[in-house]
Structures are given as structure tokens and as C-alpha cells.
Length: 84
Image 1 (spheres, rainbow, N blue to C red):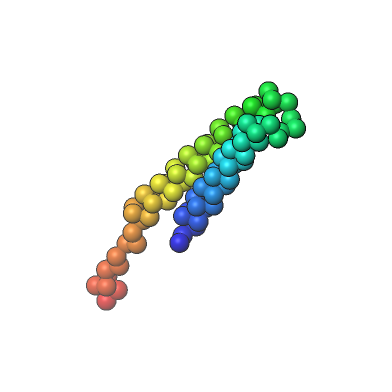
Image 2: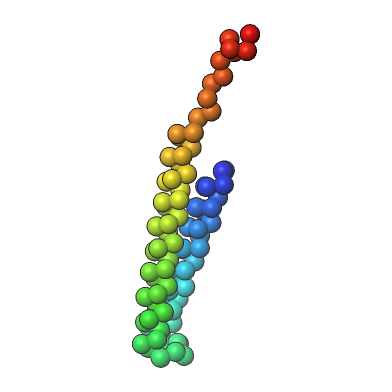
């Protein structure tokens, strides 16, 4: 796994975790377990949801750019006759 794939995978995990955090906030608000004001909880849910989506999109673009770069970067073939 090259550096670009590792970085995009790690970013995708971070994005999923941030979305999970937004879900946990939403779930605790629905159950009435949240100690924050409802309007503040909604603000944080929207913030974490948008941040998670943004990180996932960035991870996808990073993965796609790394994949395209890998296809384009083929080592040049050396001509053995030029060395003779």
C-alpha cells in the first residue's frame, strides 16, 4: 500500500468517525439524554455531519488522485543499446 492509499484510508476512517459522532449526538438528543441545549446540539450535529462528509470527499479525491498518478507514473524503459 503506497503512501497515498494509506493517507486516503486514514482520512476515510476519520470521516466515518466524525459522522458517527454526529449520529451519537443526534441519538442522545432524541432519547433526551443530552445535557446541552437543543439548539446547541443541533448546531454541533450539523457541524459534525458536514465536517465528516467533507473529510470523506477529500479522502476520495486523494485516493482518486493517487490512483491516477500511479497509472501515469510508469518508469521509463532504459535502452540497453545506448550503453554499448
